[in-house]
Length: 107
Image 1 (cartoon, rainbow, N blue to C red):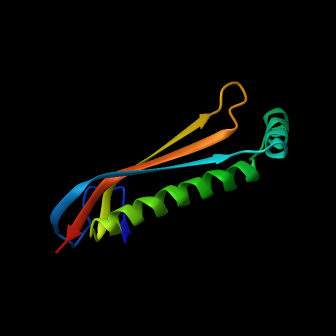
Image 2 (cartoon, rainbow, N blue to C red):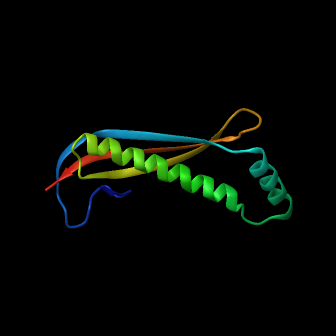
């Protein structure tokens, strides 16, 4: 399955647009990750634990997008847009990644 943020795929023609598809992945943080992130806020630097969480959420959202595209008989998803949101009220302990794109069949 080809997944791309571009509106087309170089060297390949789109023969059919199968529809807009979307997938969301919501992952929870934990107390230890939050404590380490709070320390990073004070001393600076990168938060490896949050980077891993973001990467996992993005991978899950894209995997779900590809699965939906396969179910439609698509060869690719073009025009993918990824959105990130921190949710959970005052504590904001949940990360949501939304992936949207257009499922297409290629010639």
